[in-house]
Image (tube, rainbow over all chains, first blue to last red; front, side, top):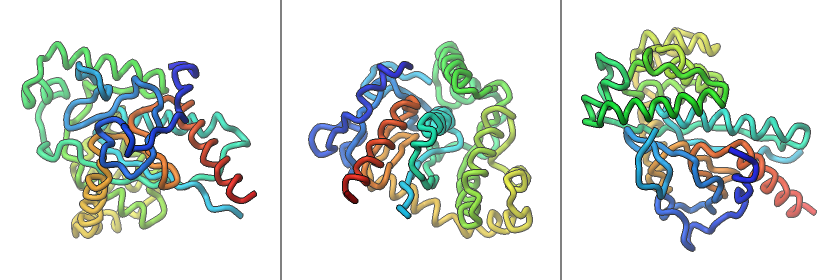
Length: 55
Length: 221
């Protein structure tokens, strides 16, 4: 991951105005960050918004 | 003296990207050098797979392939990928040795450690034990030994685990995550204001910390 990839880190998105689905109920201003950052839910980990689950 | 920037982190010991995200966060702070703001980190419980048994005979591949019905080849690809990313973060993941288990007791121990002021030390010890050493973090005896490694009193740790007196605190964290709409981990809350989802690269953490520190300076000026 390069610094350029992370350049959107502080392009914060107000959660009430179109944040990613997993943060739809979040009271926080979501930091956009790098699009490829992985999260884990249940037994699978994936890139939010991507089709294929991966770990 | 200014109040430290609070960092609340929801994670699970059994979450490979949580340990990687921890390293990325630490690297992001370190990269700021002398400009790094003072921070206070607190870990919160998140149980990724509550249906996981305490004892599972088999490898991580066995668990995901047989217990969860995922194609073995796909599981192997997943684990190879995460092992590679972990290596880039300086972590030597060993999925062949890993002992899949329920992490509820480990979370109780993290709350005990918080009450003793050693939560960060224990979080690191538990992640390392689980992902790189193949230790069983679901059993009380093993957890007590790891607590001692982290500088906690072994007898007090055992009492905390056997009494279950931190179970409610674990459930409160999990409920709070639900109230916040946190479905996946790691999830970082910076200064009670910004949400950072996933194992973001170090630069992201550095930038958001710099932004928060700047906002604070602006508010004071």
